[in-house]
Length: 218
Image 1 (cartoon, rainbow, N blue to C red):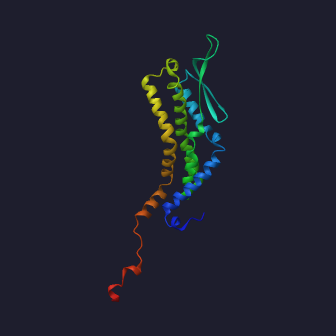
Image 2 (cartoon, one colour):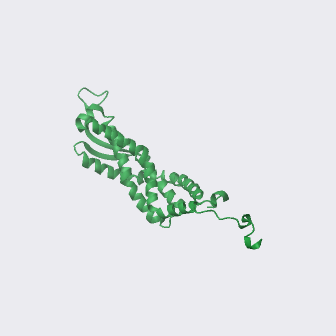
Image 3 (tube, rainbow, N blue to C red):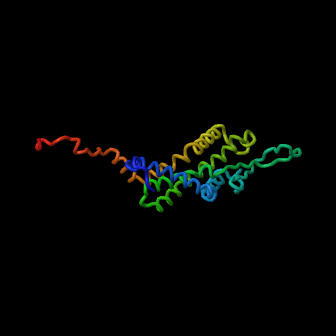
């Protein structure tokens, strides 16, 4: 990739320029397989929720680009015959928490990682627990916060638990998907960060012609 001269002269500017290009390209490619790349995180989320709340978590399944978590929480169904009840189903779109993967790959390509495949695999695996966290709290928010008093009575969530779940949802929705890929990249490419920092701190070379004649030549 040939960069414009002003950008090519600065390693930092070149990094940001290439990162932006790679991010657009990789996000477009990732969007076609996003649901498949999120399957591991969804599986981790289901196991975690089933382990933590076995009395109300029932099953989970994909429907298109959405993931549905079936529960044993009984709710009144609108326009149903008297006495008829249904069960609460929480659903989310896991891909909304997965864009950190193309972001991480774009950062690795932009910095010219010398261990690209290794770091890409390690980074992708490192993202899974945080993606699972975001998915889990999205589903928990629907049960604990949006489910109301009926769900609270059957899940046993206290007011403190509901507030903690709401906070976890905000963290998983607003912060983790963007912050974690950057932190993982910084850990994997510490040498690149050190080189960039050193390059910016190094004094610029002086032009001999601008220094004037030396004392010995006067």
